[in-house]
Image (cartoon, rainbow, N blue to C red; front, side):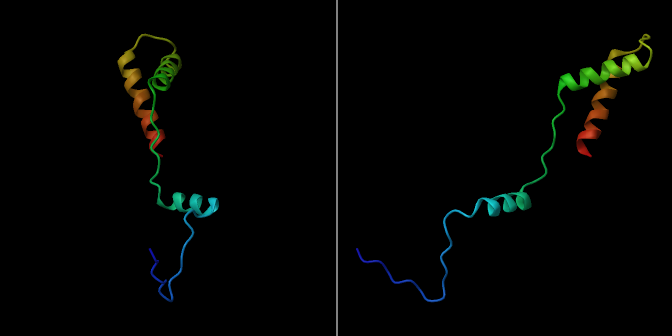
Length: 77
C-alpha cells in the first residue's frame, strides 16, 4: 500500500530522546519524593530520647510519639 507524502514544514522527532534529555525532563516533571519513616528509625530515636532523659522512668509511648513526630518533621523539610 503506498504511503501518503509528508506535509511540507513538518519535522519528525526521533522516537527516543538522548539520555541527558530524558533526565532533564524527568527532573522537571517529577513530584518531590516523600521519605517514609520506618519503625526501626522511630524505635532508635525513642531509645535515644530515653537515654537522654538519664534512663529514668517515663512513658515509652510518649518517647515513641515524640520520636515519630521529630522524624516526620525532618522528612518533610
